[in-house]
Length: 631
Ligand SMILES: Nc1ncnc2c1ncn2[C@@H]1O[C@H](COP(=O)(O)OP(=O)(O)O)[C@@H](O)[C@H]1O
Ligand SMILES: [Mg+2]
Image (cartoon, rainbow, N blue to C red; front, side):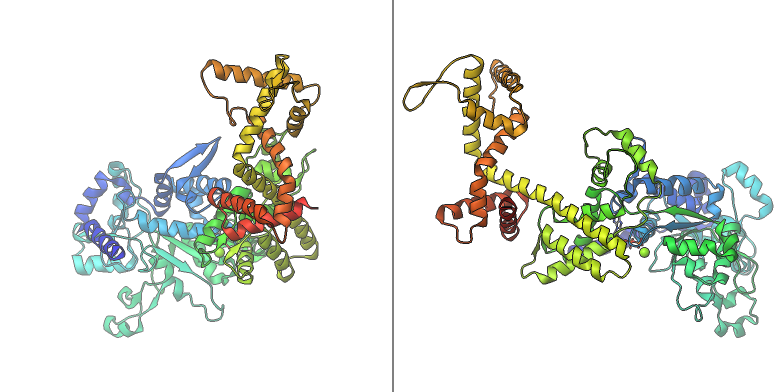
């Protein structure tokens, strides 16, 4: 049982990583490895950095996020460089709540979850190790034991600044359990775990009336008051609120802006002063990253409210827009499908692309720049070459709308529509047309789309459909040509013989009759026209081919089908044009004859073996392209 072995190994690792010692011993560890005493923000930043950072054309890309987040490089760079990096260096942003703001299903929760899971892992590594006062419910930083008046000296010697005061509970324990001898206080290594409530907290607002501040800051344990005699004895208090538990790590606030004001004020003091109030105690110091997320509408109404002004300046907002690259969007769907219960369904090639084209179009702003439409912009954003435009144009396009991507269709909608398309089919196999159809039907049921947007979106579905038509025709063309590889070779050799004779002003000899013939001008032109070689340019083109041919011959290489890109394209197109009728007839015939059936089967086999279709989707593709060709 592999899984049981893994579970055991995990436990063994944890046992091996365990450490316990006195504060005196801990201080020696700190001397050797000062990183173990880093702040929560610094640990998060180092976690991201340690996973690796690449810089591609001035754009940073973080391996930490790349595994699951696609197409959000710019937003993530901002998150890391404007928040985590300066926060790690103890700059002021650390004292602000991090608020991820973006449209629904744009990946905000996923980013936060990655940070949480990442910290759990990182706290098990050497670079990310965390130590705490043993037995403290808040995993207090052991360095808090060092009295304030000695901290400057400590900084001189260790280069570490200590922030925060020893908590009321540990102040009492220090006296009662250790007789005031800080060097004897026991310290242990801790491992972050959301499940065990160590270093990671999550808070979701519930009904405002029943919401209890104790969920955040802990509460009095009435059963122990009798034992300790007073409510203000810290031993009679349970420091088990989310803010307590998240100390040293991070705290996620879901829907923070829906929270009651009094909750928000606790957060304010926590972020700003690094402490919060619990029960009747002096302020409790805490060191934690506070992340919240919200959508734009909620955020706008929050800042519009005068009462929230003070909070507002203590929040740092990082926009998390939708991805705007078609190919990255496809990857998002692939990932979501992998993680869903549809993983067994066959999704025909280009089905997700068609959907991605649609959703990216709904997110893009219509460019102001001359000579460029939405479709071209979409291609440029995805890194495709568009004739007449370059990188500078792309940068300019992006500058036109710095806040692009904050609205449009979300990935979850697409996945839901794909899943309802699947339900309707008899076999677990869906293609681009099924998906586009389902997207269109879904628009009517979508609650939050205005009439105006709906019309626009229906038009984008038509655009995606036209894009798909081209892809589909191309695909069938390739598959037919592939099945006709021999014919393609034959056609090319024939062309080359004619070109040779034409350039050398020779005659050709008929292989059967031995008769001499002039070069077949009609044949040559029918091929050249496929790639737009004009009558005037034909001589130059043929000469170029001949030069290439003799260059190959000189080097003793075979000039074959793949030796000249444009010629290959021309041959394929010519062949396809010749085949068009066959394709038309074979693909649209309701009762194909034997030879047609044979061809269909060959092409289907090619589509399955070479292009990732299954027999259902391959047959559907052929039928569809047949209908396109018959229009
Ligand atoms: N840019 C993206 N890269 C990868 N996955 C994404 C991206 N945007 C959205 N998703 C996926 O979409 C789904 C919804 O995202 P989620 O994090 O719940 O969004 P939010 O919290 O912003 O509403 C998740 O499965 C997420 O992985
Ligand atoms: Mg969310």
